Image (tube, rainbow, N blue to C red; front, side, top):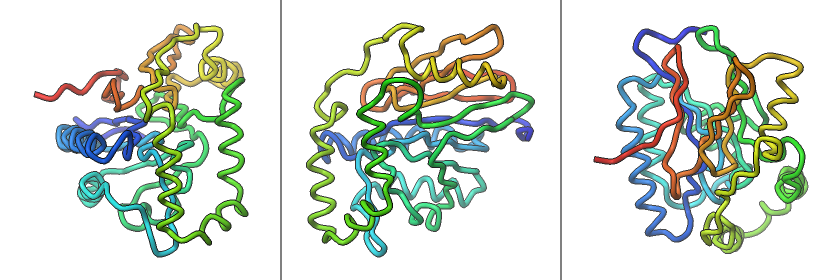
Length: 253
């Protein structure tokens, strides 16, 4: 697929809306909406790469309160013809059919491969990939279990969503425990995973979230690993203009 003239693809991840509290989350949501407004004239495709919400469980007839400004802006862009993709992360894997039906988001629960303007992209949230990351792998296995989902859906929403909030606000991102420790090219598990994939098939760009650290690393002369960072401290995103991919920071005026 080739982009239309003057149009771009944007990649963004790890808003973790809902933490550390409602007030700070709302301020961050306003900043995200401001960013969406800033790209509305040239965005053709938008990738939300996981953990948009720090907690999410949608019942058949009930969804978590809040986030109406973000969801309204996404709906506005979708109605204007922007193609939108949403990767579930380890915090929001219980997204089901509400966002696809109401906004038109395409939901992805595993990495996907795309080609734009002759460049090959390997895209995913990043949780559970490569060596290590054992805690997230365990959480993902439990939360992805159909029986666990069915059982949780039997819990009254006031209790179920309240319970999710309780645990969410004790997570590392909520309490300020830093993930900003670079482990090295030979120990970063998503870089290891990307190199393993690269041995089997060439991709120009591997783009992930989850790690919470903005990273742009060469895997070879013709392949790069990009981590999108997060929107608690970094406010970073990636943009592809049809020729080059750039990792950049959103600065409010």
